[in-house]
Image (tube, rainbow, N blue to C red; front, side, top):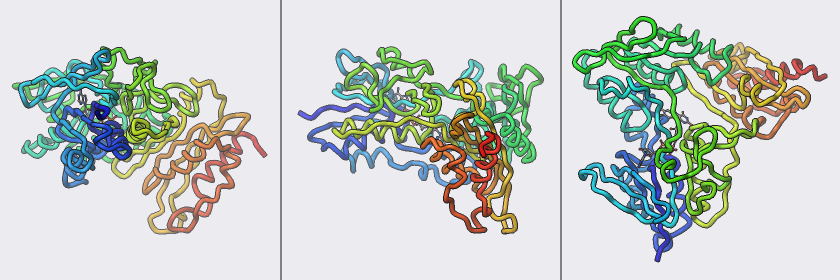
Length: 458
Ligand SMILES: Cc1cc2nc3c(=O)[nH]c(=O)nc-3n(C[C@H](O)[C@H](O)[C@H](O)COP(=O)(O)OP(=O)(O)OC[C@H]3O[C@@H](n4cnc5c(N)ncnc54)[C@H](O)[C@@H]3O)c2cc1C
């Protein structure tokens, strides 16, 4: 009889695991059932802001593999609109309900289980009070609901985006692109706390210049509505009128089922897994994606960094191991890029506060440069900030804010950081140069030189 694999969660991590396992083991050897609460599988949540904002025309372009493809081409029994409500580790079965069949109960036995149900958005009580016109963007079903609302409503004029993380600013851009007047409300001192305050200030300036009304240091406390339709967000200052409210208040690992089933959680709230993505102390149970915690390679600390890039890799690692191969997930360094209108923001490694908290003594170096030779048409600014450890000179972190392909310059910095390079070694890196692509001293190299100066290295 075939071994039985059950996957919970049909997106990046879950379906990567399922397809990798299938590549290595035939259906006679391993049967695979995947439960997904929504209607879609293997979709790009990352693309939702661009589809909602009109940069991507067709929602289906965000779906890399539909349920039918998994069924027909991969022999994976995908059950969409099935919500798993319990995991019984002793009986080794999951309990799901079929959402379109009056919550009919389904019990599915397993030998191997992959837990990949992502993260849940932080939602204060006012966000779930049933007032319409309030949207999250966690899943493609959420994005679908928001897109349909924007298409349907004849005259939405004012959008309030609550939360200034990267999803908040991407959604602010989407609302600007849909022609709405946008207010971004952030409880902290400025949006984009994923970079140091001096770099975040550059983002705030640009968002304001684009006409986005940024309200910082302000907490949303409730909603005003008329006949159940939102009309304003209440704050601890004055209310802000709103025809639509988009939530970007952060996320946390989706561990409700894990907790009940007794899976171990780490200090970040994510599920504890080993290098092979096995849940610690639970044989035959695997977890991957936004629901797990990872190890930060620079600080050595556990972190919860919910990104698609990690979810895909972790799912792949789990799938290879389930398939009989050997693979490990090497940890994260916190590389992330985003864009809001024409401004790009990138980071890798530790921020100043994180480096402090980890106990490092370090210097910082910030440089202004351009993406091309200064005389070349289209030359545009960028600011790069580096953190380097005192004593060793090791690169600890890097941040970039700029325009025109500035963000992807984070990649050589991420590679340098991953490989423990010192900023002195980086000065000699053989990076490509021609006037359409870089100044003769690439901004990355200029920043490394400045960091060397800051360290006082001769
Ligand atoms: C708007 C937005 C933009 C983003 N942009 C980027 C980006 O630019 N770069 C980047 O790296 N990352 C980005 N991300 C993050 C990225 O999308 C996630 O890290 C990734 O999708 C996580 O994959 P996952 O498989 O762990 O979880 P998810 O993609 O959340 O998938 C989990 C699945 O489990 C299903 N599920 C939940 N509970 C149950 C249940 N009880 N039973 C059955 N199914 C269940 C859900 O419906 C969901 O489909 C973005 C996310 C969002 C929301």
